[in-house]
Length: 95
Image 1 (spheres, rainbow, N blue to C red):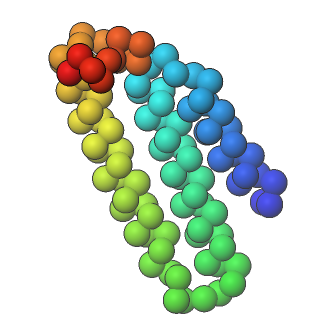
Image 2 (tube, rainbow, N blue to C red):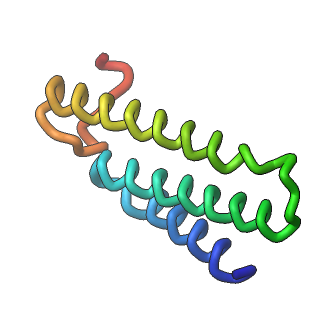
């Protein structure tokens, strides 16, 4: 487990940096990274048997769900205004 969780996080980060063609793929990589952090925090809480941090994984999962909903709303807004979700067509100075 000490090798798998950092590897999963690194794969999500590598997918985010190298696969920057569509906004949806970037959002999926971010979601994978958040789920990796959730699993790591859950296993860390179970390993130390501490009830002080038992609500931390649920709080992280709630923030991850909020982040996913905001990302999907931005995806829909971008697709409606620009016609596609290609990151190359987005220009912050034009908006």
